Image (cartoon, rainbow, N blue to C red):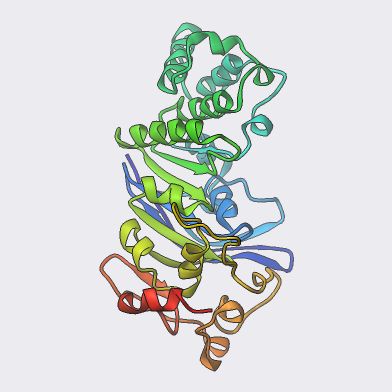
Length: 323
């Protein structure tokens, strides 16, 4: 099994730069969360890992799957990686699956592209993949419109797992699912990582990520602005943006008419800030924040934060009461 490493990833599309500096890693058998507001660059990061960026996109930096360099890889390299070593679960299974072909036929095409085996052996792989996601063999004959949302999501996971990849990227895998089905999907993904597969879980739901991820990366305006072990980061965030995200999460037993919001707008992808990308929305910002990019600091073991004025753990509770 190989891990995933992204270092200094930048993506420009025309005059826009939706990814400014993304760095993260996922070890074999590890669950890592990537969180942030919509438009922060999470899904674009996933597409870059799979070589699925728009044709006009220009990418710089480094993406490694084990010893294989993915950024700028040839199509022959991608044929051996995409689906076989690295797979992805997309947000909307109905739009990702072909409505004109049965689930079994679509799964057969996936395994047939990577394994030169007799048809009977490929069909066995299809049945095994369906069984792993708790779908019986009869679902191979069903079409997407004949299945529920939870069944479709499991079928997509089966397709992603059919070739037993080393790493799985799950982009909002439980969107639009009820809480019961959501719990089943996440339990399934946790069980699979126990078999050595790495998982990058992309979500805007911090509570969901906190349940399953060992480490979390927080992304804002195309940058990974904070990372650390999940329990520590959720309990004592150092970046003001992360602290605001945590403050905006609904909490069991707390009844509020309106949840707090982060005032202001996300920095446009077409802008070129000279300082911190969050400074226009930050209550801790000073003149320095608008003039110089923030330093990368490590305030705790295995943690990193990009901020001129990070929140010290002992001050977090007081800071969250601000405003």
